[in-house]
Length: 235
Picture 1 (cartoon, rainbow, N blue to C red):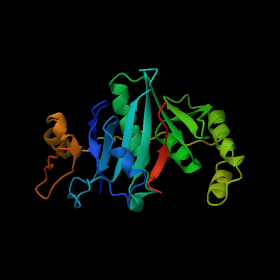
Picture 2 (cartoon, rainbow, N blue to C red; picture 1 turned 45 degrees about the vertical axis):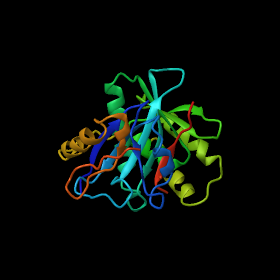
Picture 3 (cartoon, rainbow, N blue to C red; picture 1 turned 180 degrees about the vertical axis):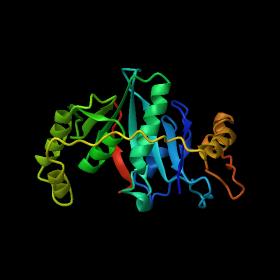
């Protein structure tokens, strides 16, 4: 199955997503409407009861003080799809779309080496900065500096991680760094998702809850990672 990637809406009037809290971390963060949303989804899937048909989702918005900088706030991947690179692909897709709207820098803060590695594959690089809760700040575009890549991993190494993090960090020692993927993320089936967005997010503000496809292949209007690979707090 090749997922479709699509931006559902932009801040400050982003759509609401209702994700199954049993299958997605930070599901409650995607109900808020003050962030933009993008999803990866199966165009053949139908809505599962009250929950939206998404495989992964990302929430994003502008920096409070610098409109040229955007933050990917939360990325969440359905539990059974973790480890397949879906979160990194969705992050790269969202960053591409933000850049196309004039964003000069896209940032994200990550709290574990697996998320760090995944975001490097999406074209992000370590800035040398940390948040107040010890998350490492990555930024795109990335200067592709191998020394910076290893310095970020060293931050995790000094925290005496247990397995599997310790084994992972040992394996990443040396001059190697992951190459950013150049895969085209806009799949043909994204045109189907575009129809869903037109039918939901294209309505009035009262219809900004995205429901995914119904059994008839259209969205149902509404009036009202670990699945998460990375999180960042509002600045």
